[in-house]
Length: 330
Ligand SMILES: Nc1ncnc2c1ncn2[C@@H]1O[C@H](COP(=O)(O)OP(=O)(O)OP(=O)(O)O)[C@@H](O)[C@H]1O
Ligand code: SF4
Ligand SMILES: [Mg+2]
Image (tube, rainbow, N blue to C red; front, side, top):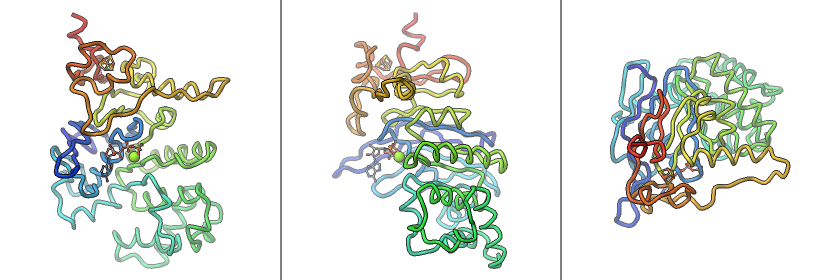
């Protein structure tokens, strides 16, 4: 297998009453080895459910209704969706780790940092002695730049700041040297300076460990700082995908342009944050044609009638928009 992770034709649905509603629609992704890959889009576009599907951890009633998620594990190529519970436990936290969108809720308030780090270690290394676990835990806290690591080990989560908790989450996620780290909005809750520190730290750790990182965010600024390749999600679909430099310099999809404007207007004198008018239509309320048509200033009748395909507009650059489609150019 050429890539570390290959997602093919992934569809995720949920139940609303008795009705099955599609939330993610035919998503294909290739995550190369040792790559930082960004997934960007507004709230509700399907970023987190995609990551949860990779962990095979979708909450009921969500389910994968179609597709495959192939992973190049240490014991060979597997389809994560077909693994039994035992095989999944061996991969989760060991080969694939996730930093969840709400870190404060994924650390247990009644256990010290030490106990939570040891639990992550001992699950995958049952033979490790306590001094060995302590040594590894301290090493990880050093690497994520936690001041006074010995003292932090014996602290409870409520005794630590948001930035420290985030670093501890990263330390736990990386403690078993995973091949793939899924980072779901890892810095959104933090102030800008700490955000920058944590993003730099994740880049360093990626270089040191050869880990691939999937960075999930609503902010193209974060993508620019951390990623090599990026997929833009809108209403459960990929609407644009390219190398980061290509995406920023030759932006093709009107939705991506809107996201970019939201980033650049932050730096303007007035500090008015641009937002794309309208909202993301939820699953079950998608238009027949282009799902961005209600919000797009360049929408035509054709856009409302038929959905554009995701097509390669230049080598490695994919876009789902009639403006870029060869059919329109003819
Ligand atoms: N547990 C759930 N039950 C029902 N619907 C859900 C559930 N989790 C997510 N969804 C729906 O799936 C769609 C995608 O949600 P997802 O959480 O992946 O969005 P997201 O892109 O991560 O957004 P955000 O930026 O807010 O985190 C949304 O329409 C959401 O309402
Ligand atoms: S297909 Fe039409 S509505 Fe959709 S993004 Fe392109 S121009 Fe806008
Ligand atoms: Mg999310």
